[in-house]
Image (cartoon, rainbow, N blue to C red; front, side):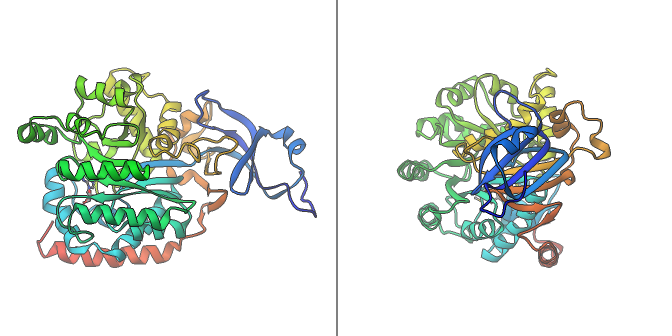
Length: 452
Ligand SMILES: CSC[C@H]1O[C@@H](n2cnc3c(O)ncnc32)[C@H](O)[C@@H]1O
Ligand SMILES: [Zn+2]
């Protein structure tokens, strides 16, 4: 291809050693090129043929040691919590939440805390190849601003919770703030909205019915922690006589608009209900391991035909937002849980971290695979680092031996957010300074013996 004096045909052409589209045919394309125009993928061709399709490109990039994959999709997290990374480790969920995280959130969270915590999270996610994430946290208006400024795709599940928080007095206020958020961002290219009822044990039947009514009217996803621990299920049985998934079913919430996060405790009835209703599951293996919450039966879910997406959960329970390590943990754990080394093979793990997340969030028309017509959300990964060589199978490398530091480029809507390892839309030093400042403030309060 040659640079043209006239209007270029396309904005960007990338020549890659490997392109892994993450499509159901499990393709691995060697020496292929991808063309991008107006933020969308317009062609995918063998490199020797590309000049026959386009005569000129505004930018042409050769990535001859790299795999180009769809941008990773982190289907569950709490970006604002990144400022609490490492503040309360080695505890089970209930103690962690009730005795540490909720008191800290009650004292510290604000618009500013969430905006700056989200900036830190976004910087880490872009650096690690993530182009899209689903988030559930207070002050989602601040998160929307941070994501939009950074140029990353986000689905904000605005929290719904019955008790008062620094963001809202009750569930009704949460719901009205969610509809306002949806209104404010409805025309955004990058920011979409969902309802985020926190968990079955913090949201009443009455509030869940209201969430469902509004979600159906606005056609929005519902994103919820469900069956995270055995305690949650036992306690629900004691208090309501029902397992939470059965209760959600009876309330009408199960269905393709619901993302059930965690799902570590599933009996045959739960599995049948999820399958019959095409409900999505979001698997967060590292958070489940760290909080000793339990094991999501990924292989069983997948063989039943249930869509399983992948998420890190928040940095206060993971403790990072690295989707490469999450893929690896998911693949290893699925094999151990199923007692079957063929459970969740490498290509399936990559799909779990890309297209399955897009499907769960209702964004599969935009992102999740590298195909013509989709937005150009792409991640390039160097495969010539010592830990990744030799390369018999690039997908094996991506899942079983890649480190996030191998990510060289990240594009969202065709715009480079990471260019040769450098963040282009976020000031790294400024974020590091803010993280230090928040650490001093929070450390002071935990040193007072209040929450640690
Ligand atoms: C309503 S905003 C989100 C709310 O959820 C809390 N949280 C973070 N991680 C988990 C988890 O694994 N299970 C349940 N709740 C979690 C977070 O601290 C916020 O309060
Ligand atoms: Zn969570």
